[in-house]
Length: 308
Image (tube, rainbow, N blue to C red; front, side):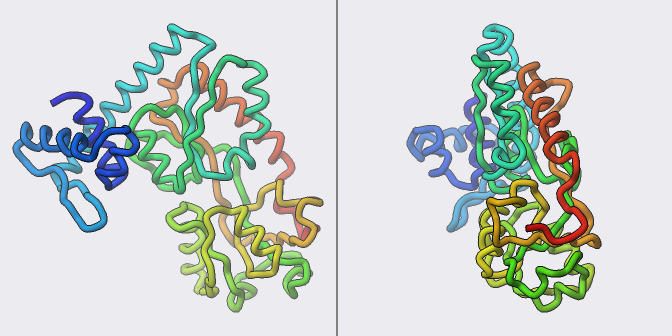
């Protein structure tokens, strides 16, 4: 059993596909299978179950994955810290996050950080949910994840940074656009643009709507918040989204964002394996993002009524 065997096994558990891992590692699917077979031979038990759409770990496989992912993550993190100590200000910071995060939460911080650390590489890995971010962190090789905060996750520390109120996004010509706030009753008969599948924001919103007894219809689902905003502005439905500063002002002349005060706010922020184990460069980037967010979101975004 080698570290490479365990790395491949963890990668297969994360992706659910031998072929996907083979592509990721630029090797053959047979080579990936050999790593798994060696582990199964040495442990004396099946670790993966084959299904038509991929593979899933067996109970024994889940046990090994939990232990291996954490251990390999610690080893990879330590190796990266050693490289940073050797190379100093020529190291790297690796961040995993959603597709629109950099635009809304990090753009100014990226420019500021690069100005102060011109020789440091910032590497972004895009995922589609907080759960995917957690898996990537636990697998090792990444420093930070920007997530929508949810329930505690074993092996992950979460730090809230930005509190986001919810708004109803709709076209300026919509009858609801003149309202100063949206109440639960206003949502009963609307056509709702669904937020991204498997996203924490989607699950939080669905839970709130179910608890309130409101069940708006959902005719479509989108890949990110920005797409929901665009469709709402075009009059193709209504979107309940966290309120972001970039959606206000002349860039969206046909959009209205109406506060929904009854909906509990959503928190976004950092997730890491361990804050005290972060490299100085990763901590500096995290701090820079927090400082810029404090300025960008200082005056809030929900306001008291419709905004042009």
